[in-house]
Length: 340
Image (tube, rainbow, N blue to C red; front, side, top):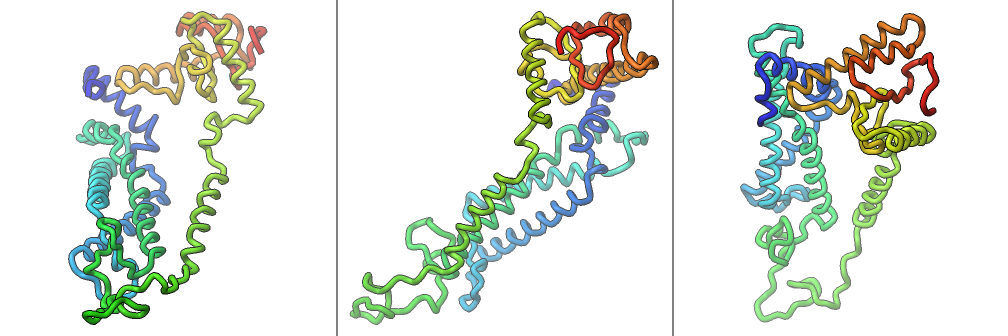
């Protein structure tokens, strides 16, 4: 909470504006969310509400014994109901974020702009983004389990299923005359009675689930290569980080390229500024933005001759305290590098 109220009003307003409408706008401002994202989550919401309403109605009354839809025998457990209440709470929070966030562009001078930024910087959509797909997957998994167990299968063990013994459809219950022992076709089946053959769906479904799981593992994903670098570029980058770690003092301040990845982890040195590593306090965000703007202005100002001289780099050092530059596309420099 101290981060929310740190600094004076002017600094706090600037920090909130930079965070909400510049650095994290693609996460926080609902005005720039892609229409496909709205359509996808609207479809998920409809599915979730439909299945939730179905479970609620089933829990209120006994299903029709003549109905053969397995979904008519789905009743959410107490744990599932608690989880869906949590999903509903995240939906309400996201709705509040939409109500507050949708509106005039950031440049408009609206009277509630400060309140709007304060609400949006708390990530009102983040929980809903993650929880709604999970809720739909859980519902589909429960229905798939019911389908595989059989449409009117009763669970005899306490608390083991969604269908109670007193809710077995009438055609499944065959009354046994008093005084007669169980036999095939009457009452409970005898142990000698052949078991019911496994349905085709019961055989195919596990194969389908395993196939989808393996497909998800095989599909390309950005998480497999968080650096976004090719193998050759990654090796060069790690080699540069190793050199910095071994040949610079612990208090060195390094200017890294925009594509820098995990520099602090591998080089164990501080960066002058990193676009991804944005502070959370208002004063830190304002300073972070100032450093980015200064580097851009310095690069444009001194590039008139097609490169950077030693004197121009020394001026950069005097203004920023930078001790070393790890250059990717920046340059060329009119002096030899310390390490290549």
